[in-house]
Length: 185
Image (cartoon, rainbow, N blue to C red; front, side, top):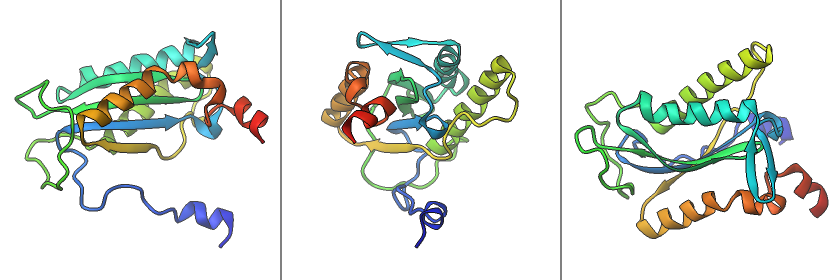
C-alpha cells in the first residue's frame, strides 16, 4: 500500500459505538496544517501568542460561551497546535462529573453537538477569522483531523491537566516542535 493510499484510508481512532455527544470530559489536540508554527512562539517556557494565536484562544473560549452544555477545562495554544479539555455537561446540571462513563449510551434527546462537530465549529470560525486578518481567504489553517481521548477517571483528568499546563515548558522536546524533530533525527 502506498503512503498516499494509506492516508486516505486511515482507520478511525474513534471508539466504535460511543456517543461523543454524551456528558463527559474529552482531551483534544488540534494541529495546524502541515504543523506550521503560525500561532506564536515559546520563549523561556512560556507561550507568546501572535495575532493568529490570540484569535485561536478567543475562538476556543467562544465554544464555552456559544454552547451552554460546553465547559472548557485546562487548555493551551502552542505554536502549531492546541491542547484542550472539553467537558460536555448534562443540560440541566452544568458543572457535574468531568469524566465520561465507560459504557456507550444512546444519543441524548437534546441537540448537543458531538466532539467532532464542536472541533469542526472551532476550526471553521478560527480559520475564517485568521484568514480575514491575513487576507488569505480559503487557505487551510488546520489539519483535516484531530486527536481525541475520552477521559474516564479523575486520575487521568489530573494527568492530562498537568500535561497541558506544562506543555510550553516541554516545547523544545515536543514531537510537534519541528525544531526538536530536526535535532533528534
